[in-house]
Image 1 (spheres, helix red, strand yellow):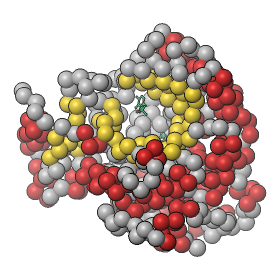
Image 2 (cartoon, rainbow, N blue to C red; image 1 turned 120 degrees about the vertical axis):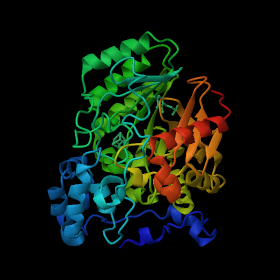
Image 3 (cartoon, helix red, strand yellow; image 1 turned 90 degrees about the vertical axis):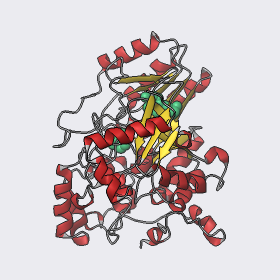
Length: 458
Ligand SMILES: *Cc1c(COP(=O)(O)O)cnc(C)c1O
Ligand code: SF4
């Protein structure tokens, strides 16, 4: 039943054997992959492939999970999850589609570990961690609009998503409050707030490119989606729009069944084309098992409508931070017409240290991905630096101290004259170095040495 999971050997740094296996990416899972779950055993394909069912049956609590998964998971598992949730920055929310992809026989299933926090897996946070580690709030001239780069801005119309990912960078705002992150910024759909963002964009002629994110544009009503898209396209200096949604990964059924939403998106894309601008979709897949035949069918519909879709992936330990998994993901995305754009190093987010990797692991994976397919289907591996330096090519560090796990970047086009860090997870360092990180004075001297290595003079 779970042939797919066996086909993705998680052996770090091992390239796949070219030959028969090189066509693995074309074998997309079909059939009624949800029927093994007791709660979904009687759900027909017709019902499962509607967004109404996907929304109605979305699991948001341990009790609901138990009602669907039943004895496929152990009593200890549910206890561990309830404990884990108390220390997690994100609330629990997982769609029936994704839930059905979890292999409950695998102790570390890559789908499960992205959405269901287990206490036994949680590591202490890195000492340099801050909430909103990217400093987005500092670069927000208007509530819900981040303007960091000269010609592009990030607009957050809503703060909810069809699922909640454990590793979400915007855990300071996205999703409902949790015990760990108690008072999240609230970014509800509000036309008045949106108007303030549009007014700022209108008054900033250097802007050309707007990312409409969140939250997730799947959760924006069709009439709102269309109004936002058309309003932005009507601003003469705005040339490019991107609608960010994880929807294609978590609920491809919406594309197949929510005609109003897809039509609204299509009208914006067509209007963009009429006025010689571009409007595209950016989505988010992390594991090759997330690309199924139903994904291909949803993509076919978007392809027929001329809608470009690109993918941004988050590199995660135990999920995709090995060469063969990432190669398969990239090839499979390309096969269904999704263009791999970025692989992000995992940001420093509270409560999810277990998912981060060191810079060196990601660099090794990148080396093995480049060359496996078309260059324009080869993602850039980027670090979104802490403190607002923006995205940097992972290879472009000024200095990387692998022993202490400190990478130093500069960002001359975004924040000239400053240095930015990426810190490897403590788990990846020697016991002795881990001990040094726990002492404030030692931390300072390790960071000072790294800055000197990067050529900064005091
Ligand atoms: C990522 C991001 C963008 C878009 O950057 P690209 O590199 O063009 O994809 C824009 N604004 C902010 C604040 C971002 O974080
Ligand atoms: S879909 Fe994106 S914004 Fe929403 S929780 Fe996941 S990572 Fe965060």
